[in-house]
Image (cartoon, rainbow, N blue to C red; front, side, top):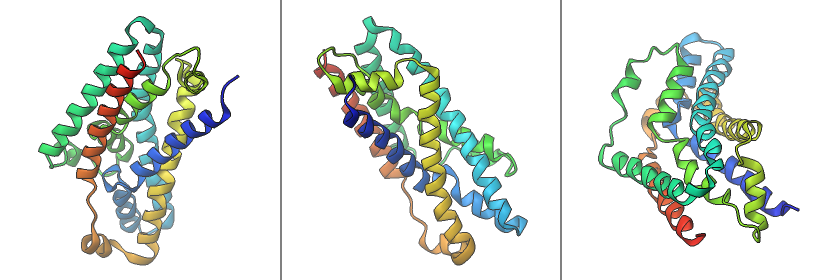
Length: 222
């Protein structure tokens, strides 16, 4: 039997990471505010958030599905987890060195919010930062019910991978949507200019930490 507590903790990890992504302005909630103000209608905010959410969902699936399928390569599990950890660390270090947002994002037409959201999530490593942790908690150990619970969630089952991506994206969209709604209805764009908060450094450090933890757990479980 799977440990219900382990399953609960895993789902909370999916939700919290989504909230973390949603709060980050780099995932697009300022664009939703801008779109609604330019259209001068409330529905524009909802439509923009929906398009941003769809792009984020596609980005999560583009990362999670291949790695969930790689769970069948049990003989190379440790190498896959270490490689994923190193990749995430490299992305984090790169973002620490290069503080500028990818220039190609500025070339995407404002109306193509789904495409922008997808590219932004991929460029910032939004889905990649989940990989080492999920590979770690999905590792197979006959004596560890927590790992078995995680395995049942992400053991290469496409339906479960879709559920993880959808729950994560929903949390991201709700978190970003709350901020966007408050600014749109009460504070306005001037508030963003006066009180802009930048999570780029925190984001990059999070990637490095997640990568290190992923590599450490890969060595501890083998």
